[in-house]
Length: 270
Length: 291
Image (cartoon, each protein chain N blue to C red):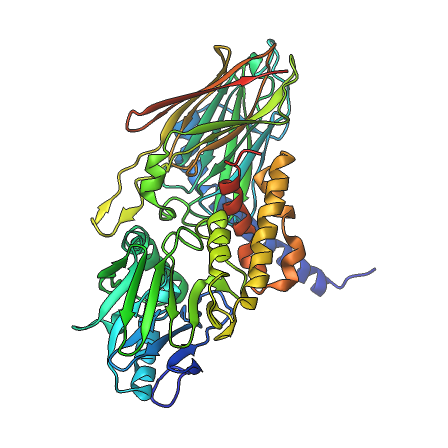
């Protein structure tokens, strides 16, 4: 079909407008990352943006900004020759962008991790994997949410403090399959106070009090260790894999910012 | 919405019990958060306000409606729970001789949510609230409290965690009316901001009360009791049953949010605004249960 030069010109102008506004939008969304976060966490190290090592799943529009389910799926198995060492979660526009770092070994089976995060503003959520060969790979998703970190403690704070440190493991199926990655879930009862929630009666910012270290092991061998920050939702929850060689004990040891330590063990049987 | 004198439209649902019907909308700049059912009860000596409104302006309108109805002074403002659409009118009633009453956990809830609510009021409702507009209760209900309005006895009950962790209900002896506020939703989807299990438990107990009428926090100004409770009970029990089943099957929270309760979509207004959040809240509660 013949297009008149006038109409062609119009289409070109429109295309130009669309592309430039897209570029602007992309630019804005990358501002925090390109403007300092990448440098801060990874210096000048090259990061490949791809879904071939890990892939991040997050809801585009969060229903509850203080409880946003985030899933990282590992695309490569954990083997002695090549494995995912660390997965770092960064939330660009949160008051504290560092959300968590999870460390794995070849024995972890799979480096998948699922948790729930607080998202404070419309932002990219990023997962950066470091593999055993030292390479970095990044996957990201845009999440629309606001107020996740400053959202008030919704429940009875006294009750929350009373059950603080209580934990539970849930297994997919009650029996494990030995010598294979088995999916498990750790539930931790802890208010994970962000330090950004103000108490109006005392007129004080309730000081931060959150879980900052999680260590998971099976029969004494490390499965996953993590550093976690305020972006992890109240009652931290982690889905992970482990490879039991036989019947044994799954153990969680956690520490919070007030120095409280809690541990919990659960027997698992094939 | 407002009468000639700027007074709120109200309906007398039972002798001496007046209710203003809210709207099934998300709070925004148009409705200024004035979305809940609010009203008052008239005795020979005293008027008790039950929930003051979603904005200081609505509180003033309620005050005007009371003046148009009776010469009896307001002695009590009862806040049934902490949500903004029920407490922002408090400032209109603050004066010597008026006592503010709430659940024993209301003060703490207001204090924890205060700054967040202040910011939200400005952003979402376009109303500039000040800290002074948060009027805290001066009388707290530990389990039950009786108020005598002069020839009229009201029984206030502090509930265990249900819709929120600070729900209060009001029972009027004279007309056997149960003012449940947000313990009862009709038309507007129930919003879980406390405990799903707790709410179902409280409702099972409330069902046994021989009241004639119930006043919901969102819905018609009054409805027959206990029939009024049926749709909400169905929704909450369905939520619980489907989430427990999802947990038994090892489903994730995200999977539950996508699948649970979609059959109820046509039964409730504002379903898309609240249902999935109800699922995530209830999921985080129920996953601690052993099955």
